[in-house]
Length: 141
Image (cartoon, rainbow, N blue to C red; front, side):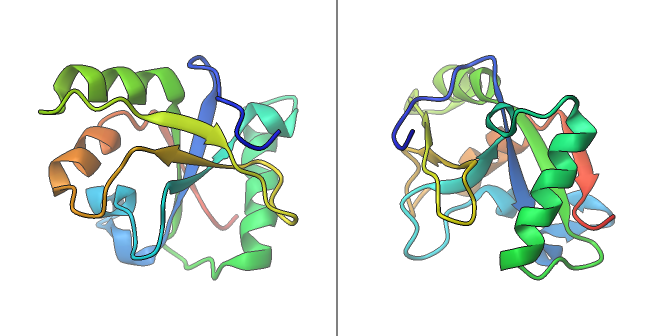
């Protein structure tokens, strides 16, 4: 339900388009807010209720292909909610307390957001998030 807090042991995925991939690796810029955004858009994997990670990623690929251009280099980054939150509390200079909330859209029911990021955040915040990436997958199969 909209506004529900995603449990720390759950996982979210972030679509990282071509411009944030260099040499096959996701860059920290993929985890920075764009102009007009109030949260970093992610998808709640457990909400998809799939039997395995590959099935979750396949569902996301379908969702992304309906609303985004999936470039050849684009990737999907998987993060554990609690690891991201803990890393920020422990290592960010302001002991940032991130919130990860369910924020569904009509055509994207697993859509969620990472809140308490700011547009003026330095790249260091994005780099801390990048360090928590556990798995990556090609956005196109």
